[in-house]
Length: 410
Picture (spheres, rainbow, N blue to C red):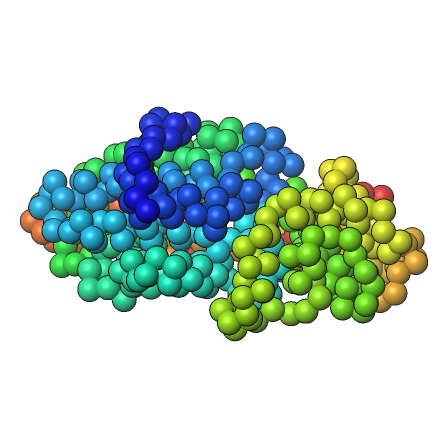
């Protein structure tokens, strides 16, 4: 059924017009409406209280930017049919529909070893059946199987509408000004050469600023040490809950969450088992929060302690290091934790969480950002911009984190 057009008031872009038809029908579908209950930035609001925006916000914003990008490219003489334009907007609209509760924080924890991109594709395939094949072109573009590669690059590349929206949006809601980028300027500098997306040379400095902003947002927001600690504790809570549940210890939680606690779910379970897929479509942040509120009173000391730490924001202390701690130091910490909390060797990792975080802002040879000059010469960004700046942004930065109770801090 064709829906009438709607207007949404977005804090970043003002009024976003939604044309009636399949796009509006998809937005009103329960699968997409679920994104209203999935936080964009996981537990980042434990550090930045304003960061409560959702995947729903982001998906609409990214689609709005896609609409602008298509208008710019058409103005420059790039042929994009109505069908291709709608399909590309659908692809970006649904690119995150496979996210589970708390987005990246619990990726691979709810449905183990299944990425949100794989889950998004499963959602899109299910919706394509429901909408009688009308998403086929969008899926082809999403999977980079369509002849016009630049349409996929607008959806997923190192300079796509996804990144342009989330940097500005996450900066706006967190209050971290370093993430602000000139998305409008970058979009107006886009062009297509030999079927691939390029940036006109006068847009080089806007792209440089975009990459620098992305680096700053990763270390100041996405990889903020307290955010990392909170999300690691949440991962450990789900790990413990699964361990208990699979040992026939009953845990109070929603029926949908219980399915994922009781057994390991495979990709085939989600594609072929209607009950399992439906359970995932019903999962959101509220399932996890309501479970944590119950589990903080559970008789299992590990589950209750960790759940209380999230509910009451009484988090572990966390230390970031440029290199790993010495084995002797790790052994000493684990021994102290074991003695103080009377934990067995296999339980220590619930109270001493360690790992690595890595980030490289610009990945060479991975869908490079290409610059086009007035003479139609095309060069990769690294050979076109300030080499010292871009070279620094290609380096893989690795940090080691260690989280443990405050009274045993390193």
